[in-house]
Image (cartoon, rainbow, N blue to C red):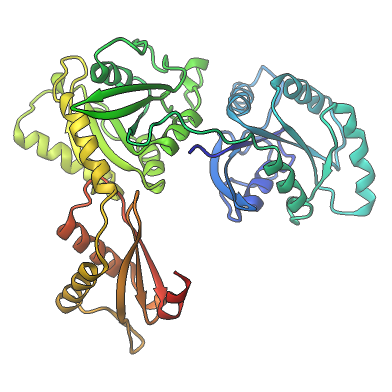
Length: 443
């Protein structure tokens, strides 16, 4: 199920990033007195009153077309507004209403989305009177807040979640495996979709970013039902020459949220980029099954076993957190190994849904402890009492110990490796949670 999206917009230096960080309870965006520091959208999940949502921190909106960066920031904010379910318009209560605020207000009135007007930097009674002039924007009741002092944020968050649209059921059938095809533009995602479904359902072009919408396609292969979500490509920072090349990352994030298994498509010639790592990282952190698809392999030179092994090793090195993901070398043009994709998707989906009995897990723990005893710290030994599986998709395990602080990440990785050696779990991340024995009653 896709999470609601909240875009924080406004002109530069009104406190958008500070508000973003306060809501997220961690410093993600750069906060600086220099206008325009946040030049790209930044995404973060947040939660309020059992509502989980994704926030977008946008660059400030300016109307000086002589500055390429300002034009890019304005375009980015417009994209964020297009994708958002709720828009928080932040203005400066100390500076008062400006002509730029009025310009932004004009854009927002045309957006036909729920807009919450947050008058920031209202941290004294003297400044509260400044709130009223913002009624002139015609965007409803302004709310006085102070992001830096966390004043009024509870009321603001109440208003945000109240404005969320009613959730509707997904189009996915109960026994259907949903697949999100993600990656940077022009790596061959649409061609892979077309090859999988056997018909030109998605426009294919050599111009990067021509897939403008996420398109759901239902099909059957080997008696298994699949729903394929083809997404707009994700684009590197700074690529702002063509508007079509900056099409929204948010559609791809929504697709990942809805998917069971993610196909991470990589261009064989370009290899791994920083943007690939960010895209793959989102899928990994979301607990989705992941398959790495190396496309255009038909025209890659020197495709002997040794070069393929070297390419795979390089992939593993660059995507260290995806050691569990299978790698498939394909050509959407010649359909090389395309038929293996659905077979591999079904396998990974089964791996994600695997359940292991507690008795079997505890036998594994006993064997692991005998081979590699738990670490000690300052004379105190870690004791592992038992492990149980709490959930699937992704598989989640809870390990009960005498003191969670004694569990070193390297020993946790050792346990994860033993789980994978014993049961596979290929293509799926594993979530290992360490709890003190006293927390057992909370299960």
